[in-house]
Length: 189
Image (cartoon, helix red, strand yellow):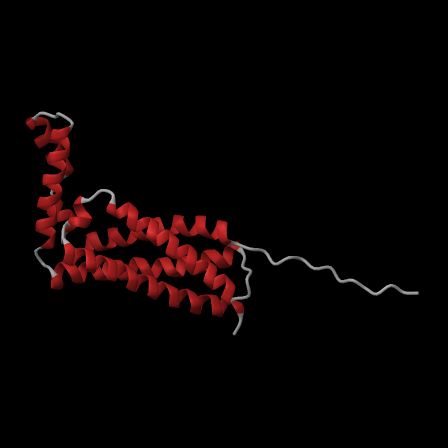
């Protein structure tokens, strides 16, 4: 198998493994507290750090399996394949979650987000009128969370853009050139 095909195969493998891990984490958090991901500000950052670590591990593993060296382009291609899988599975999972597994989640999450934002603004000493105005400007959270076609495409695009930037960074960090070797000729007597 040539190097490019092997990179594609391994990237698909690790993309689906990371997607399964993502769904497992999300389902676990959903069963603990369905609105926790929407109201806990630190949790998404913790999950992001976990996924960066997993992406680095996947990249290093793929690089080892293809011989220990890859160019920036090969690393970026690998991460882009993984990113496409993660973004697509994420969107499909969210649609399934909010339409089949827990159809009431958008309404509950919207209410929890509104309550959380209101409490935070009250802590900062904002007046009730200012809070109401700020929440009105934020728009209807339930509409923003509903698994509509528009929201799904937007979510896919944003995920792909974020993973794309992360792919560029990780590819730049994990590229590894094959050392150049010079032919040595035996000395003639």
